[in-house]
Every structure is written in C-alpha cells, then in structure tokens.
Image 1: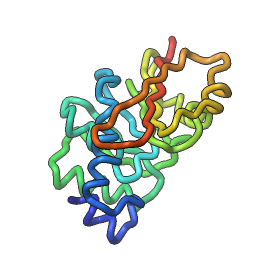
Image 2: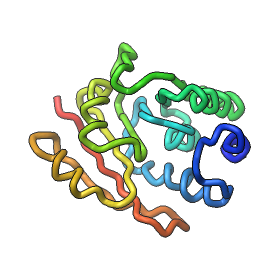
Image 3: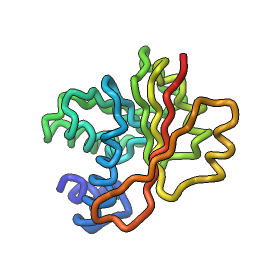
Image 4: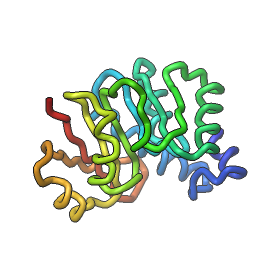
Length: 178
C-alpha cells in the first residue's frame, strides 16, 4: 500500500497495478530467500527498497542496508522502515562505487541494476571475504555471464519460480574467496 501511495507522486516503479506490484516486486524479491546466508545484507541500487524491504520483513534478524543514490527513493524507504517498525533496516544515499561504510557485508544483492561485471567491479569492496554476492536478473544474461566468468569465483545460476508470475527470473550468485 505504501509503494502504491508513494508511487503516484514519486514515480518509484513503472508498475502501477497493486496486484502486479505484489507479484513483480514483493514475491519476486522474496524468491531469493533460500539463497541468503546469515549476517548483514547490502541491497545495492535498492530503488524503492526492492528486494531489501521484503527480505528485512521476512528475516527480522537480518541487518539490511539499502543503498541508492536517488534522494527521493531513500526518503521513501526510510518512511517505509519507520512506518513498518523495521529496526533492522538502514537507508543510505550514496553511489555504490563511492560508498565507504567502514565495514564489509556478508551479502551484497542487486536487482536489475547493471551488468554483472560492472556490479562486481563497483561493489566487490563492500563484500566480506567468504561473503556472497547475489545478482537478480530476468532473462538469463548469457553474454554477461561469458564476459564475467573469466578468472573469477564460480558463478552459480538458479532459475527462480515466482508464484503467479509468468516471466523469466534468475539468480546468479558467487561466494567470494579469501
């Protein structure tokens, strides 16, 4: 309801129908739950708090940092966290390549933000050794995978099933060595 309300003024997402918001944003975000580890999660390019807010609701013990450079989107996610009483959520306005939190995260996740190679290069400094980087994609980005795979950690690929959504969804993830 908050996403629908704020979307009318702030244009947070192109999806306008509330039922489609549930399918395409909330359930889509929750599809990655089985691949999360414990600890703290950084949602890079969080936008309207997706997937970070749904994951923080589903896993209240998970510390979630939402990172986005857009001030209006950060205002929105701060409001959502306050209204829903999500004490496990922190919202930060910054660009991923410039963000220097003074600590590393156990997991870094992104949802349709940029190419695999660009995301990895610009956010790998935020991932702790042994941490997990998760890339949420729609259709399988085979060209990105081929370019990315050379000389890096093993990239795993899982096809995600989102209930009620007739669209391709994939999760690409890797565990950072050392």
